[in-house]
Length: 155
Image (tube, rainbow, N blue to C red; front, top):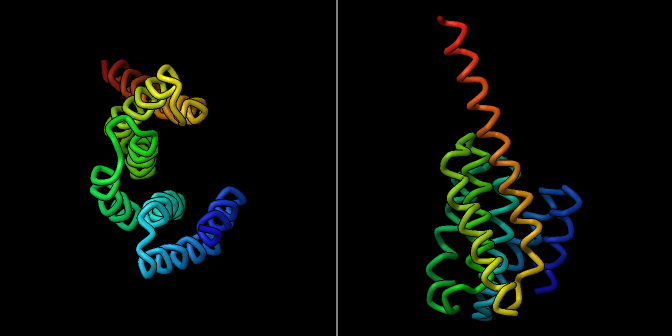
C-alpha cells in the first residue's frame, strides 16, 4: 500500500511517469500477496494516471479490470463505485466525449451524495466529483454554443 500511496502523491504532483512506476509496482506486489483492496486501489490509480497521460486504452483496461473486483467484494453504493464512475468520466472526457462522460459523472455524484446522507464514508469526495462534473458541463455548454453559432452563421 505504501507504493500505491506514494504513487498517488506523485500523481497529485503531476509526476506521471514516476507515479505510474510506483502504482505498477504496488499492483505487482499486491497481486503476489493477494491483497485485494490494494489491487483495486492500484488499478484505480493507474487508470487515473493513464488518463492524464492520454493513454486512454490502458486507462479503460484498468477500469475494466477493477470493476468486477469491486462488484464482487463491495456492497452496492460503496464510495469506490463513485470513484470508478468518476474515473470512467475522466477517460471519456480525455477522449473528447463529454456526452459520454456526463452520465458517469452524475453517477459519481449520486453515489457520494447517498453515502454522505447515510453517514457512510465517502461524502468528503463529493466536492471533487461535483467539480469534475462542472468541468464536463462547461465543455458541453461550450460545444452547444459553438454549434449554435455555426448554425446561425449558415443562415
